[in-house]
Length: 229
Image (tube, rainbow, N blue to C red; front, side):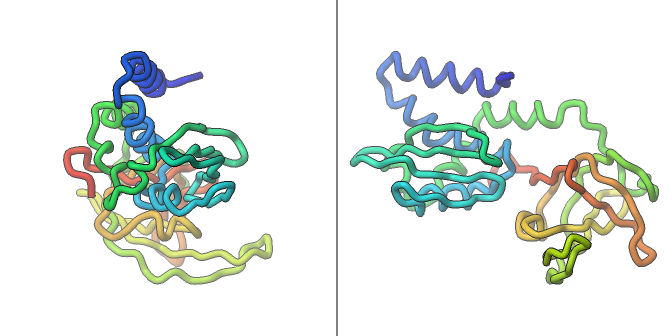
């Protein structure tokens, strides 16, 4: 089922095409990429770098997304974006947009479309204060600020794989707790970020309370839509 955000984007694109204005390329190049960055929790800088560095008929990984360049002309490049081999989108991006010296995707993180997506995402979430977390709790949602991220350690899992793990320290107004980060999660967030955690579980490790996100949980950064970091 297509979301209201995607419906609005498709409507804007169609109207831009009908009117013959630059609106269509502007939305394709910026607002929709900002929407994908937010929806799939991909850093906009990494997304823009993946787009600009992927050559024709080449593929690059960008967080949860895989990006393929299906072809280039003098004026545009066509990208196929996938998640776990499932097609997310395929659309052209103008070469003018890709040659921007900064990252134009960030400019579109302030639009009403992105604000409404954030509102939809956070609607109905009941965030627990850290002081109320108890060992054994599941389906924990909370918002917190990242205080510390130690150097990750390499460990061997029970499946025989080597993984990178770090126990970050996060806090809200009521207290602090350790958050267990695995592999790409370690580099996804930084000290000073405000994060949203969903569907996590509270456990105990070496005598301390700890949050674990697990396969069904999510970790995302809360972007200040009034002034993107």
